[in-house]
Image (cartoon, rainbow over all chains, first blue to last red; front, side, top):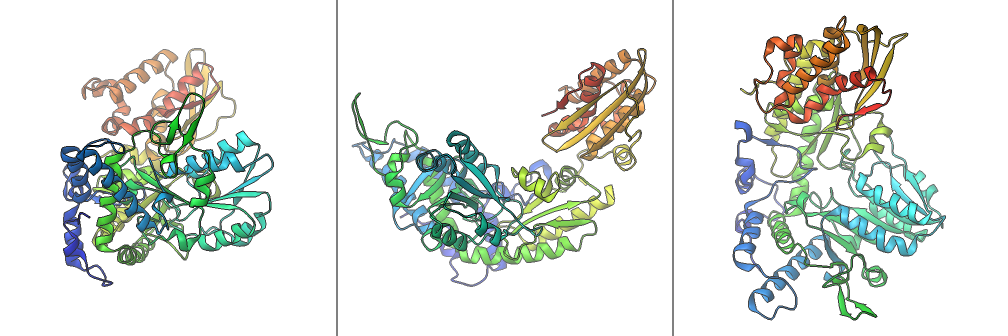
Length: 423
Length: 150
């Protein structure tokens, strides 16, 4: 197994991230050292995508310069090596997510594709007219639209789990919505707008007791907190590589083996078959059954390198440090006159959405950009949530472990300037 | 602030804080709704024509500073102009924002609209700046539909 170059440096058990370590981490990310537009970059758009450490960039480069070959069935050294690297990346994802078996990990283009895959295979097989799919009011469009497509095809219904003004699921209402008509509960682990960490374990237990299956959207959780799908008990879990230091175009779907085995395939093509005649095709076993065609080999390998990098620091230590950033950033933003935080759940990750009476989120984002601070402004692909909250958009700062308290000071100061300009 | 020209010219900030002709109109000859899904900007432009002349123009909106300030400046400069003059100004304004050449339209041709020249450096915001103009054009052309700029 290839070790990341930073491993020796970062390994520090359970100790909090030291200032020295943080400096070293900053050096590992070439883009964070760059000065786009001639300004020092303060990157606080991590919920949209993370920056990439050199180890991940190197993994992509190494693959194309010295390892590139198509996987499976090649009888030559390069192909065998590429196959090993690809399989080894799958094992890293399996371990990182706590999946019991490697064959329960399917490589996808990202969380969105994972949800579509489940809706179009498991969903089409099991959801019938009159059945219900539960989603929450805080879902990203990617965990709404695939279910609407399934609903329309199958004559099913979608019911929405409400949330409080603080941004927490109303658990009692969820329990009331559960019935023997509920076939699938699709809920986000962490809200990309509010930062809310949902009580997925309790949701899964209740859903299972009602006979429903649960898909957890882990796009925002996997990069920021320990995930253990076995302990969680979910049926399906999806995540996106590019939000967790990996390249774009690669992600993972975890599905319990018992489901994957009985689910029909999704796309047809090479690799997903055992044998083909014009009369009959015998499908391959999971995970290959769901990976038709040449996959994103370099992306999977680089995602493996991203996981190695995260584990070299430790996801628990990352979570602890980001909680400290959340606490500090919340305090700083609450002290800014005229700014209001959106999303104040008790359990949160480091996402700070806010609005200001004097300025539209796009104006806030633009003024912050003039200070070299990159945040996101808009509906964040969660228009139903915006409607629920009665706002057209939010400005959103989202942290990663390479951010610092000093950067949150700069954020707060820049938001203060917004008030000066527009107030 | 950086050395890059700021988007928020003082004129824009003033018009955003204190928009001109920000009101519904009782008996407009025409009105049209503009929507920019990117920002969530909504505005309605009202116009009262007397023959070919714009006797009154006003708007209401909810959205970003650029869309609101641009709408405000537009109503300011168009009152009393003919339909033809308004269309010619829109063409110049749009050309200034969309052209690759920074000096495609001289400042003296734009008058008060010159304050929005900084927007051309921010391609995603050009649509905010032109939203009111597209809505006005739709109203003048009798298209009482929702105009989207995206």
